[in-house]
Image (tube, rainbow, N blue to C red):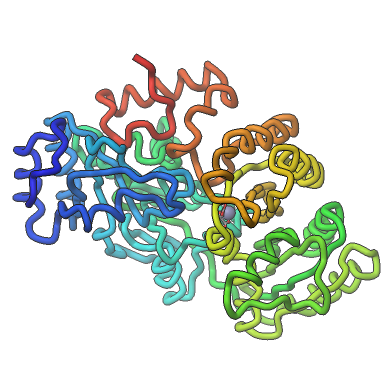
Length: 483
Ligand code: MLT
Ligand code: ZN
């Protein structure tokens, strides 16, 4: 272990004790190995850490936390490191240790009668979906980064994604949690009861707390029966109002089966087609707006595809859609989803972007799209306004991509002004400045204005009660108190 670059705030005795605890392979200290854990997916933050701790068991997680707490050293819990808001990166001064949960990969139990899955924090969301599917069950939680995002982070950030309109956010899937607390004790709350009114609902305090109150090491998730039938369609629309009309039509048609309704703008799709090899528009002509919808049912022979086709024919006649493609095979359904899921990657390849993960009441979406675009263009006239996202639940990723011909630095110099301009519109529409990505390091300064002093003070009191020394993921969620 090289000690040459150690921050003076991390005692060498702590690192020696951690190394002894975790053994070979359990701790990384070489800067070349730690760098990927200290940088976020977007490349917005480049932190530094003297060590990445990689415990292999819950007992080791607890022992790491205890040792760090005794030495008053802060820990940054990390899963798949897919945060869009810098939620899992350590500070630049090298004063924090990264605690990776990625080696906790056990699926502990699956109960097909109870419809529950008990698994550890480091299981990727995709692996969790596959474990459910292998038993003929469904974990209806789906996000673009599911191949890398891990259950601990998915729950710590209360991830949302594509199925929220039907099944809710990660929070709604959680029946029980196991959490390592700030003093290194282990709270075993792995209950799997649907009814359990026995005081404060502690698990929900940790869900969405972004690792600032405790470290989630395992969870019990609710599953659903696996769909026996699915039907998906990709459509073109002339206006955002038409997208709302179509959403309403599909809800009236079969609200129980409608599991996703995603929006894509012309600019968003253009970037995907330009940047992602192997993608193509499944429609005869391009349109100003697009939507991807999916229906699913556990009942075989429920006629989902036929029903969707009829609903879309009616929508075409009513002038709600300009064109539609129904997925004729599983491969085609996957192609439709690729057009939607590659939006972030395509935008990253096109240069710098300013992400506004916001939500508004569903009826306000057309106004959001129009006023948001105008507000952004008033600051950067040729910005690529490429909103997309989960229209069915009101969560739009109002992403703004740099124009061609400027450097990312020049564009990002406007990022605060652009975020503020979009937020003004969102605030006037009774929306939220963070729908599903959380606050991380990017958004704590916005919290007081949006949630108000009383809520901020309640949050600070919860933090002080559960992490009195402020050693869990400092600087995330809550704004730092100026001294
Ligand atoms: C997605 O839904 O693809 C992500 O949450 C997106 C993003 O803001 O880039
Ligand atoms: Zn999203």
